[in-house]
Length: 336
Image (cartoon, rainbow, N blue to C red; front, side, top):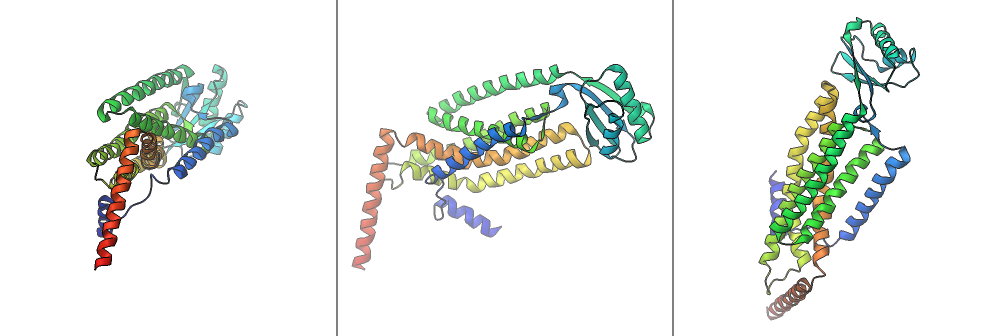
């Protein structure tokens, strides 16, 4: 821990530094490749795997089973209808079976077949029908919420930081997070449920918070740069990223640990679908959001500002000040 603390102090004082802003073309290239894969991957795979809330269908929960074998449920459903069944374990003694919408007589037959296959009473098999309209309503509201959130975030950041370019950089980083998180879901086949959509929106708050902290440090560093400063604008931005690097990593670890625990409990211990879906989207989003804050948002902001005449003049003065300082050091060395 002492070594990590010393490492953080070195980054904060500038004694040690990672050239993150200077290598921004590399980060842009990596981001472009990841975005391309996130878009093409789900398309080549056949699209996203949507939950029953979006597609509609019948759901059966078999309680008090001795075995949670999914093959038992699949074979039982197959004896009644050729419609494929999606089977998952719930807790330690229950099984959830989802199918497309069935006729009432077929649904009753499936319920009886599941009870017989698992050796339980018919009353232990609960049945419910889920229409697709509920999931569609949630999606529509989520999209409206996304638009409103992005608009408000852009306005507030423009007013707070007194430059619209920070807003642009932050919004692009947020969109990067959403695309990559959705792409991972599509490529891996994780089921997209309303809970996952809610998790996607929650990611935005975490990612934006992390980005604002870094941007606040950037504003502080660039405000301190005067005519005698030896740092260019890009170097000041890079220093701010390095100064907040350890904090970003620590915050991400602290956030990932409980989310990972919730994911494990929801997926393995309880088999709770909603808990698992929210935790999974948060787990992926926190990792992606931390990456975008460090390697996308800050370098992009520096890129947007470096073409401004005022920044160019400041960079020229910084280069001159650095040259004078180097010449003075060389003269002192010769005299000694």
